[in-house]
Image 1: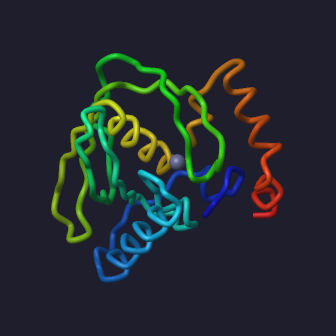
Image 2: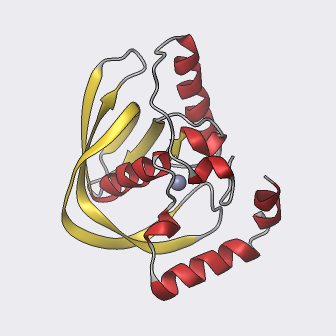
Length: 169
Ligand SMILES: [Zn+2]
């Protein structure tokens, strides 16, 4: 898992151009990694692959399960109320901070087979979609924080047991 500070996490990912078997394998690896870490979403650059791919298995606020993957996703709509809710990330283990997100998000992209898909999310799932799109643009959720919340989260990250490993790559 790439941790906060790893270069792959902080640069924009490239579009996928090859929809071959290696892409399907990448998505499988990402699901395995996400489940092993008990996550609800994972972006490819979190496992060091700088491509625009993410996977998710995430409930919304009505406990409806959303399971899937997106290749070359684009956040085409983000609207509704801005909700500040607790957000964490597998790349900053053990840290959580109230992060503002839109209550509704629409993402368009492709499947591993290259078929176009359009995903609409609300509540917690909308938060997940925005979080994963941010990853592919080279942003982590602490980049969305300001003021004391940001200071506290970054301080916790610096003091975390994994911080040393992250700094080394
Ligand atoms: Zn994350």
